[in-house]
Image (cartoon, rainbow, N blue to C red; front, side, top):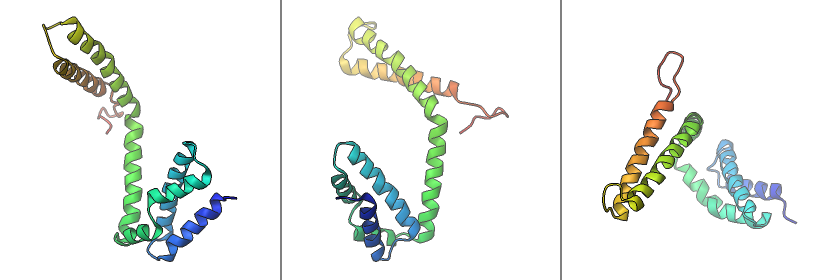
Length: 160
């Protein structure tokens, strides 16, 4: 019977046997492996098949170890922590505003396209012209909506 914990331990030991990855690197790789595993398992594969395909996606342990050896240790840890922090902080602050702006653009753009193409507001217009004009309008609305809904800091400056 397949045991995920035993399979992960074997994979980690095999990757460590090449001597190029630190424990921190291996923990990072394991988290990526588990993300792939969960995605594949949720798609309907058995645990064993999902784990096998997740390893295939990640690459052979010797290849992964070799690639990690090309990057100095200090850069790996620093970049991983910095990238996660920057990406997460930016997405958390913009998520609702961007969703609302996109929705506003779609809310205006789709009817505008229908009016232009089928209603012939500005005389005969082909499909490409109608799509381009509607996209330009909806993009403008989305950007205006985004700019107007950005949150301001207590001192009046815009948050980035």
